[in-house]
Amino acid sequence: MTVKEYLLELKKYSQYDFSEYSDNSIQRRLLKILEEHELDMNKLLEMTKNNPAFVENLVNEITVNTTEFYRDTDVWIEYALSFLDKIKIKKVINIWHAGSSSGQEVYSNLILLDAYGYLNKSNIIATDINQVVIDEAKKGEYRLSTNLRNIEQFQKDIDKSINGDHLLKTIDFKKYFSESVTNDRLEIKQFLKKVPLFIKHDLVKEKLPYEVKFDIIFCRNVLIYFNTSLQSRILKMFHDRLNNGGMLVLGSHEGVSGFVKTRFVKRGNFFAKNNIFHLKY
Ligand SMILES: C[S@@+](CC[C@H](N)C(=O)[O-])C[C@H]1O[C@@H](n2cnc3c(N)ncnc32)[C@H](O)[C@@H]1O
Image 1 (cartoon, protein in one colour):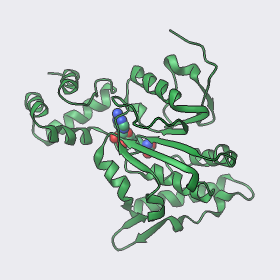
Image 2 (cartoon, rainbow, N blue to C red):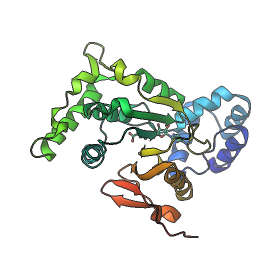
Image 3 (spheres, protein in one colour):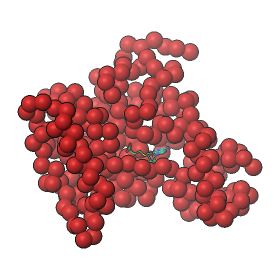
Image 4 (tube, rainbow, N blue to C red):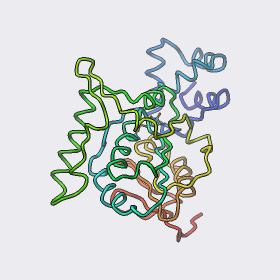
């Protein structure tokens, strides 16, 4: 049985559909799992059919969860200058982090929202298919050494790229977490942790269980694992879920193509919802 055939079986026997993930990454990861668990394809299929806990674990192992605070610092600086600077008058800001992994992306955003005084008017939903990383995100505890380095890099890049005064330069990042050097722990403060709603949600199979429309959707470094037709379907759904004038933030190697291309207008690192689009069949 090939990996592709197995994924079709997985779709039949579980709630998960990885059949439209791009071949290379899923193939590599599945073969690695087989090796680590000393399984062959037949045994894997048998476990898939009979053991839901095994399937959950498999899903957690298949997904790539790499993330960090202020990943691609230029994107966050642009986010502050071209989005946060301009939305002062909005009464409510609805934000969706889709594929939020262990939460560093969400807390990166929350720190900026608080610095701008927007925290009380922000509704944040953060979703991921992987329950383990969702639990980590809720806990908000990370390794101090690596994560602090990413935050400090962001501060350095702010100072390098913004001339003159700007609110970004005044942020006291240490206000948002406690540090334990002996335990190598960085823990996000409770007043931030309680803001986002972290929920397990599968972008491919499930409708988001909230009707709200978003002002900005972050879906960074997730679509890269999907084939082009699945990417287009998810992008169409994001278009529908954005308010007019809403923005989509993708990973630095991701873009909008296919039949949804005209539904977004690229602005710097962002994709603005376009309502005047030409239908393409
Ligand atoms: C590489 S991480 C990106 C994390 C973060 N957005 C960033 O850019 O740093 C990709 C995340 O997408 C999640 N993911 C993969 N397939 C998904 C799906 N169908 N629905 C929701 N999340 C998914 C994975 O579990 C993983 O946590």
